[in-house]
Amino acid sequence: MLEISNPFTSHFRARWWQMRADGRIECTLCPRRCKLRDGQHGFCVVRRRVGDHLELGAYGRSSGFCIDPIEKKPLYHFLPGTSALSFGTTGCNLGCRFCQNWDITKVSVLARLSEEAAPEQIVAVARQHGCRSVAFTYNDPVISAEYAIDIARVCHAEGIKTVAVTAGYISDEARMEFFDAMDAANVDLKAFDDDFYRRFTWNKFSADEWLLCPPVVSLGGDGAMYDIGFQSLSRMVASGSDIKVLVLDTQVYSNTGGQASTASFGGQITKMSAFGKSLHGRPERRKELARIMMAHGEVYVAQTSAAHINHFYRSIIEANEYPGPAVIVAYTPCQPEHGIGDDASTRQAKLAVDSRAFPLFTYDPRRGESMAERLSLQGNPAMKEDWSKAPDGTPVDFLAFARTEGRFRQHFGEDGSVTPEIQSTQEDRLAYWHALQELAGIR
Image (cartoon, rainbow, N blue to C red; front, top):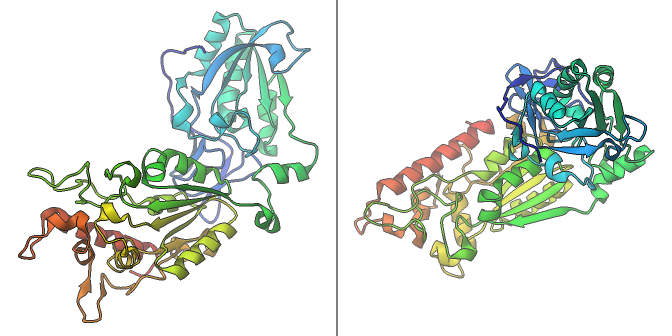
């Protein structure tokens, strides 16, 4: 692989978009016509709305460079016997399940765009190594059309030809200008009929076809989904792939000895966040994975508990029916690490919900356009109140829940006093509940 020095970075303003009457920006580069609100990116990942415009995050950046014979493109009657400087960016506007370059087409931009180069630098490297052409390959150059066109202009000024290896999935608005900038192209058709594309990509599935597809299910705990695998989970959801994820939220690394994870509550006592003179349990707030998943937009999300069996089953059914990614975060007691009895899982899971430690909710884009339409808090007690109440009228708050579990025991004095750390977690749980109420339109 070749290295390019002098990094070039830019928040490049993309072309080929229009503002819709509903306030969303519609990308017109390819037939997908992704409609984006602020902060959302298209199916290709590299085109993202920022405020009142669209940005191309891959401009001036590459996933790698290589010198290839032109015949490898394959082109046999175009500059035969010469070398081409091959390079690609990342992302793609198709979702072929058989993609051989999935590691750069289906990962996040920041994960793979390690090389940075201005168009002039790319041309300089091509000249340095005697390449007669520059080939846009590895991933589809259509999604970074502005970048490819700018490189082509510099190439032509220096007498270097350009080659596009593409699936040709581009709109009428952009097609002419893109291909006018190319001296040769290999349009890589996957098949010769639309039925193949319907069956072997994630695009254009009918409702009946979605129901016929066997679900692809991924199962993981705190480490796989909250921590080390968090980036991969986010990328999967962003891709729009019809994959269902079940997260067993134990708030601790249950199978490696009980260390804290980012799902652990503030003040929680674990083997890596002990209660001592200077540190009183985990010093950080809990990461709310389900809320983060909602921010991806077009994804079904549920935060649920098997102790609430109707809510749990309904979440599973809706997730399987949803024509796209779905993430279910399920409260999962770990008896030894939570400090509860072997027969207490159902009781403690219910108390976690009642005390706002782990509120139930579902988020379903099929319900409407607004967040209030999509988010439902049904299943929680006293939905419009701060705290639910026990039959005797006493509040069931987070402190009431924490007093019943060994992982918080040292935060409570014999006189009933509580530490500042556990009081802070009580406030954090209430603030989280208030945020959910506001999003659901009931506060």
